[in-house]
Image 1 (cartoon, helix red, strand yellow):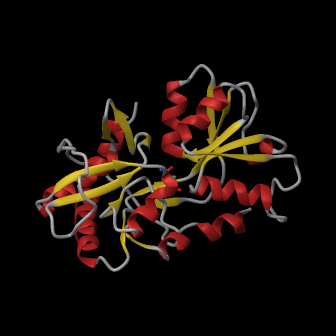
Image 2: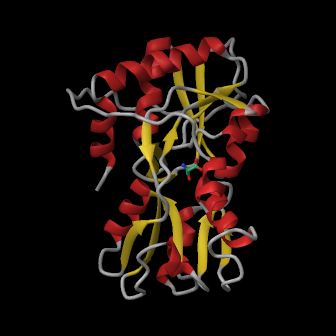
Length: 267
Ligand code: GLN
């Protein structure tokens, strides 16, 4: 399992967030009329807004930690931020196709993705969690033997559990465990509440948000021990934008602002 997970996971290790002062830049949003275009004055961000606290809908508007960070980047660049919502597994293809300038989606930096896009410096550290019903007694990965497990398609949670279930040396291989993929994690959580599946594998902070909203019924525990780091993705070779992204991220990290944004967008 460890071996399988470590293949899909990250290179860098230590990453410390500090605290500091807050300044909320509030995000301005518009519909994208044209594809991302370096010549115009828009910065087009693609995301999957079903991943609170990092991105979620407030009415029609996409808000969260990533929109606030990218608003800051857009402000620094003197550009207008445009946010587009799509399925998680369409994000990298949209970037590669030139529709987006960047992807900010609580996206874990991993070697496979890094072959297709360029990643910023890491800005958040995370780990996969298991969400289950509180009477199901699921406290670790071993308890997933024979269970139906939901994941959001194309996420690192999907890769990790699919390896565990489908690879011959996987910890859940031949135990009767089954993986069910969903276009979005909130649908998976709904099926968990409805009893159609037994567990959902998802990143720690979004797991905690889902559990807080259903605290009578759901609990969360750690799935694996491998830490993941989130990065903002730009098109391969777009060093100018990458530098702007990294400068703003470093500034926000140094000032402890990212941790504040997480607190601001968490329940
Ligand atoms: N961090 C996970 C990944 O990169 C999940 C991201 C998400 O669902 N938005 O695959």
